Length: 462
Image (tube, rainbow, N blue to C red):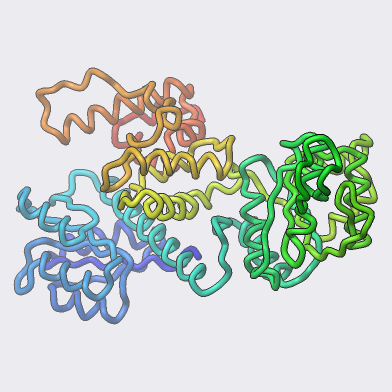
């Protein structure tokens, strides 16, 4: 859902400022519009609805704050960057309360900073647009139960789910632990003709052969020691619904033979029973192993493999679809806020970048657990990178300088801090920009800008 056109509206009564910024942005793929006063800005915005607005605070007629308020009423999600040569703390606070994205002063000391700020505004706007698009799609379409994203792999999987959910065909889901195999199975069930019947999930790898057999087939009273009452099994309970067998490669060859017979004949008997019972369930099987290798090495029946591999679905690990992280993080944030009765969030752009840079070995489940932890410990407001667990940012923490002079003005101290931080990163990565970008979560082009500003490009060896 990426936007092709990036439209920015510059609002300033000074011709020099408009010309300078238009020249700066015009050759970088932006559609640049100019308005010379507040009323013209409002009319231009009504006609074009710009994504980002860069607006002067003090202009003849309507002030920047008045225009900001009007633009937000027309389009609440527009990103507005206020600029002024006469800024005060009170005005900055007021602008932020009205929904401004940022506040910068003129004259501009560094045009690279201005360009970087505009780029961040566009990125945050795109993130918000994508989340709204996702929520709208979920409201109008399938109930995806956390199986969400915009990556090519997930879009293809969701399109496949739409096609196969109404069918009765058996499905085999393969993916690493934590990728969401059960969620996917549940999604298929909820959007199938069996949705009003039971969805039963069982982890085959977590039970011994005898316990798994008893759970699946059920048993008659007295069938074995401990069978104190007749108990129906999952084959019986899932009749008309969906049975999800996770870690199916954890079953014994004996049980695989019994399962194959049930799938072929749609009949079974409880343990200790002579009568045959009919059953009609849809099977969704899952494995985190290379099931074809299991077949080759004789640990999994080849005929059963072909019986369950009617429609194969491969779930990629989260590290291979990091563009889905903002979607998933916001989905879990909404879930956890509802679960815990809180209103934490949203995630800051920097926090999203940290999460995108992290290698999620526990996949979607690890991300879900992390979001729950953050929401549980956070007392409202935006989630910043320092709210994340230390292991997510441990590489960054190693480079945080501890010798920033305390007598510097805030902006100078911030610049001093950033320079020391980047020097540490370059030292750690031997000047490799690609590695530095991966480690910091800062995109290469933005990292180049920062290094240029601090005169650090000479250290680069990428």
